[in-house]
Every structure is written in C-alpha cells, then in structure tokens.
Amino acid sequence: MQVRAGALPPLQDAAGLPSDHLQPVAIFNGDQRIEVPEQYGALEGKIGMLYEQSTQTLCTAFCVGQGIIATAAHCLFQPKNNKLPDLNEVTFRLSYGKTYQTSGINGRHTPFAKNSIAVGTTSFNNEPPLSAPKDWALVRLERPICRFGPLKIDPRPVQELIEKSQQKKIFQVAYHWDWKHWQLAYSTPCKVSRDFDQIKWRFIKQHFINFHELVLHDCDTGGASSGSPILMDTPEGPAAVAINVGTYTRTRILLREGRIVKRLKPDIIANTGVNGTAFNDIIQALETADLLASVEDMMRLQNELLLRGLYVGTLDGQLGRATRNAILKFEETQGMQQTGLPTKALLKRLDEERVKASHTMSTIRGNVNEPPRPNPTPRNLNNFPAE
Image (cartoon, rainbow, N blue to C red; front, side):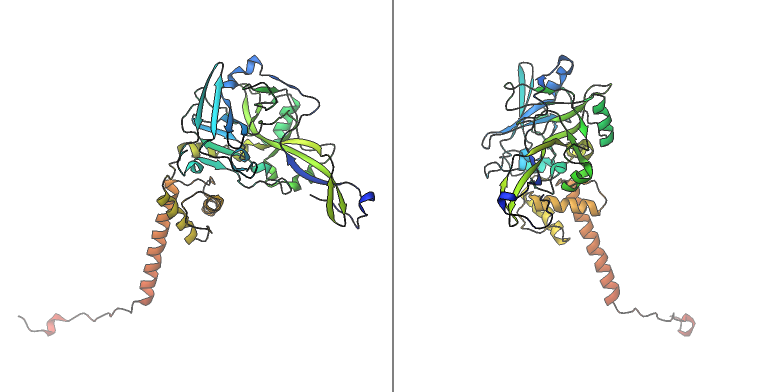
C-alpha cells in the first residue's frame, strides 16, 4: 500500500513511503529454534511435511483428523516459477522416530483431487488487501495415516491468544529448509500481538481481508514452515490455535512523478497466521463428506449453479475457482455451513429445489391459464320420469 501526501519531489529528494506486503520467512531477535523438547515428542507423529517435486514445494502440515490434514492454501494453489503444484503428486510425510508413512491426496491420479480440499482462498495477494487470513487448507488424504491421532484445534479469540502468549504458552513446531534434514524445529515461546512499534492495529487491519481471523506472531519461521501449527500449552497437552502462513512487512519505496522507481529493504513487522476459528468447523464436514467423483456429476452441479446465476463459466466438470465460489455463494444464501465442497448431498439438494420450483411454476401457470370451470345446477330428479 502506498501512502501519499501532496506533491512529490524528484527522486534525489524523495522520501521513502511505506508499502505493506507479505514475504515467506522471518527470524526475530536471533534464531531461537531448537530441537523439539522431549515433553513435546508426541508432536512428531502429528506434524508432517508436505511436498511436491516438480515445483520444489515444501511446507509443513499437521493432522486434524484420522485422514485430514491442515496446511496453508498457498502450498497447494500458488504457482512457483509460473507452475502450479501438481495435486496428483503432492505427498504428506509423517515421521515418528525412525519410521515414517506417506500419503497422497484423496482422488489423486484422477481429475478430482481438488474435490478433497477445502480452502479459504485460491487467490493470493502479496499487496493490500492481503489474503493471509484466508490462507488455510484442509486436505483429505488417500490413506488415513494419522495413527497417533489428530492435533486438537482450540479456537480462541485473538485477545485470549495475546494473554496466553504473555504467559509464555504459545509456541511453534515446524519443518524448515535451513534446519536439520527431515527434523522438526521448536520455536521457543513467542508473542502474539496486535500493535507493533512500527505500526498500530488500526492501520494494520486495513491491509487485510477478513482481518478478524488474523493472528500476528513472532515465532521464528523459515522456508517450509508455511502450514505449521501455532500451538498453545493446555492442561490436556499442546493444541493448535492457528496456522502459520507468512510474514507481514512494510517496504519503503521511492517515487518519481507518482511512479515507484525503487524499493528499499523491507521492515519486518510480524509473522502471519490464520486463527483456528476460520476452519475448525469445516474439519468434520470434510471428513464425512460424500464427494462427487465423476465429470457427469460435476457438470450437473455446475449447470444447477449456472441456472441460479451463481456460476459463470464453462461446464467442464472441474472444481475450479469459479465453481468453488459458486458453491460458497449458494451455501451462504441458504444459511448452510460454507465449505465450498462438491458433495452428493449438495447436488441432491440443488436437484430437488429445481424440481420443486418447476412444479410450483407449473401449478401457477396452470391456475392462470385454465378457464373457470362451470358450476352446474344440480338436477331435480323429481322432474324426470321413473325408469
């Protein structure tokens, strides 16, 4: 975001003006990452690595159900070097001690791997309005390899997370490019905050979509930590309160005649996370959903949404951004839980509503077009001779 005030001088006299954006990594006050302490050893069987070879995508993900993982949406849907990760080749690796298991996305090697993913967004902005608060994804796995159980999600208002961080109850566990190979790193208790020395919350929130779901923190992150859980100590053990997704920075820019001519080194404000309140209610919906898995059914779904003016696009039988957004719009208008998932239950509901609407219109038309029926006077049988 550019902040301007009045006429701008030429380059040699130009002041640096702030522009707010996201970058992938940040270390605060020195590298505080260490090996995962023994007391958190069980997290090894619940936090894994998500990777895709062709784009060199490497992120962290964690179990939130027997066959469901959570991660950052950009790990699955953001291009790298103009190429999207191949969802058929995305692999989740879960290690525990010297053993490990892997699984792909449910429906991989078919056109329908996307159907097994619930996301906050597949459109990512690195300039305001920033999409970080919607950068979450839930993925149904091909095999339920989370045999050590899920990480409990403990959604809390941000103010509670701030208080917990002041009690040193907030920390992070993640994979990192620059950390020991195939090993998780523990980021020592870190701070959650709204206001920072460089900028206050009343300005920060103007830069983000869905700012109420934003968690700003200073847990140490590195490449591949996107998608990792922000954790909170509870009496029952660690619980995930947010997903780490990126870093919020302010960049000084030099302008000449209203054009950006140079960007100075950015000031790191905080790391960004998505509050568990954004996705917690969708976990069970994805876990139990009976998903569509044929081109014919997907085209029928698209056609139903098209007839309602919710979908604009071709009937290609694929869950693209337009189809997912149309599902979300329909769910919203019907007061349903907003999942964006193409399910058999959704298609059945759309079919039934169309049939019902068609029957209602036919009845109305019939009543309007049908001439009035005669109301004959009853015969007086006494006027007729007996047979």
